[in-house]
Image (spheres, rainbow, N blue to C red):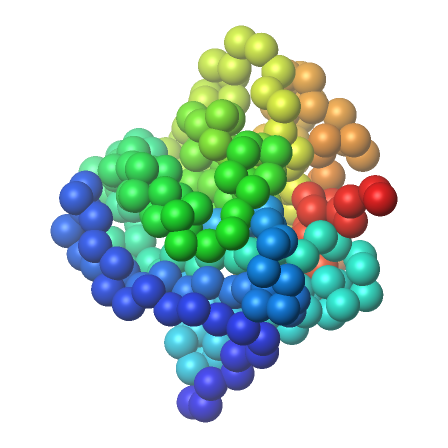
Length: 265
C-alpha cells in the first residue's frame, strides 16, 4: 500500500514512556502556513489510533480517515482555524487495555490512567516544546473513535484543565457495563468544554439500535450535567453509517468545524 499523506508532517518514531511498556509512533500534521508564518501559534488536537488518520499505508485494512485532506480543505477555505493534529499510534494488542479506564468482567482493560500519563505528562510537554502551540485548555483537544472515543471522553473528564475540546466518535459506551456513564455522573460542576458526540445508525450488525441508544444515553447524561446541545455539545446520529474509518472520516469535517471554528478578527 502506497503512502497517501497530504500536507506537512513531522514524525516521532518509537516514542517511549516511563508509564507503559511499548513504544509507539507519533505523527504530527502541521497547517499549511506553519513554516511561512514563523510567529504563528496554533491550537492542537490530539487523536488516538493515529495510524488510521492520514495514511492508507499505515491504516487498518488500508482505510484511512483522510483527516489531512479534510483539514487542508477546511483551513484553505477559512472554515476552521489552522490547527496542529497529533496522531498517537496505538500499539495493537495493548490497545484495549490502554483505551479503557476499568476492567471488564473478563478482566480485560483498565490501563487508561497510565496511557493518560503518557499523553498529558510526556507527549503534550514535548509537543508544546517543539512546536508553536497554543497550550491552554481552550485551544487543546483530544479525540478518537470507538474505544479511542471512549478514552478521549474519559481523559476530558479527568483533565478539564488540559482538554477543552473533545471529539468523541462512536464511543464504546457499552464497555464494562457502561462505566463511562458513572464517570459522567460524578461531575459536580459543569465543565467548560465543547464536546462533539456522534454515532452511526448501523454500527452494530446484530442490534444497531442498542449502540445508538447507549450513545444517546451518554448525550442525555451530559445534558443533565449542564451541556447544551447546539452550544457546547454537538450530537449527530449518522443515518446508515457503520463502525469504520470511512464513516468517521466523513464526519470529521463537521467535528472540526464545531470544535475549531475560525476566530473572529
